[in-house]
Image (cartoon, rainbow, N blue to C red; front, top):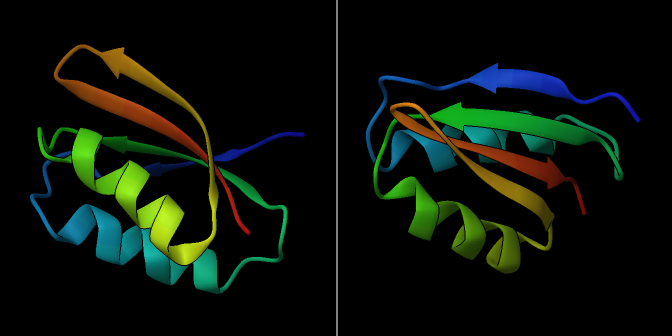
Length: 74
């Protein structure tokens, strides 16, 4: 399944989680999304967000300057 990339680089907490929540709210269950962020707190915030909101964090990848999160909407 192909996943869109949501570029949130340059935004700081809590914006990456808030914007991801809003984007996933508009998506169908099972939709997958790659979220790119440079916020160092995202490695804590994104997994917590997924658990709290019932989404599945498929993968977290460290990339230069930040992280990529592969999320499936619950």
